[in-house]
Length: 404
Image (cartoon, rainbow, N blue to C red):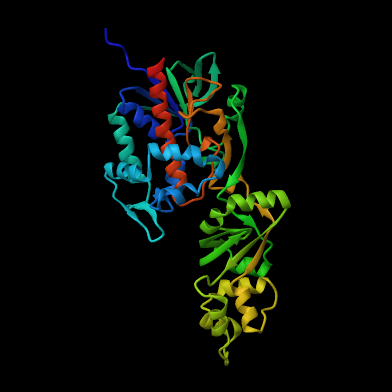
């Protein structure tokens, strides 16, 4: 008598959950994906509005260093299972060519998520994966799973479960962390969620805020403590945000939460030394206004000049002015909340799962994606680890089922 294939419930239809579903279906298991929202992968589609940065092309060592130190050893195992090269091959296998941008970031040539998602869902359908939307997991009833659906409560008894429920940012897209009490009651340790890849409060003058909110500061270097990154920042009405800020956001958040404020230093002309810049500023100003002269001599745009003035009157001495340009000190006084964060720190403690990502407190239940406690900046690192953790969880399910 032929044995029926095992059934696996995947709860959460984001990148980690859908990747796990694909991997399991390819292995011949029956897979049912439950998604509480009316449609799948909403946060993934939102990420695609900015070009869908899939991963990064840098070597493994610096790639791993982008993740928080406590999670790096575990994430290395995920990347061994599903590397950036594997992700690129997978995307292109779905008929979506990729390219590497000037910063080393990898994008689909379509520069959006929707074509990739359509091809992916078609593949999943071909593999027999069943996707149930508006199916909200409400917990366990003994060993069974309970779901709230438009047709009322539904009880399921799968052979294994993968939870891919997301973190706590962008709640309106589905990641609301409502699952936390359920897992805590099941004995799993869950670290409190905090905003990651988020902006910070700065007390701008009203004139600066009103005139320059929404203006980018391009090609700057940002320093906090011993860390310096090159990138872009965006002036916001509340303060400052953007890719360069997000790369430093973990340390900035810790400092602001600990001390009440922290200083971020911006170098507006990182390609010039103080001496070279001072030499340019030593040339006669002539009849130019100060702003026009700085535009010509230091190649600073209007927002950068106004930012310099936020620190007080500009020094007349060329060396002092050059030092100001290369060391704009911004006092950050607060952290924007989870509702404005791109991602979140916190979640299921990595010590609460084994190397296969199975919950130690609940055998047969695995966790993947941003619901686990790890953190990374934007730049492709978030999606890469989410996809890879889905692969690891799926392989863990197969190994656990085979070993029963």
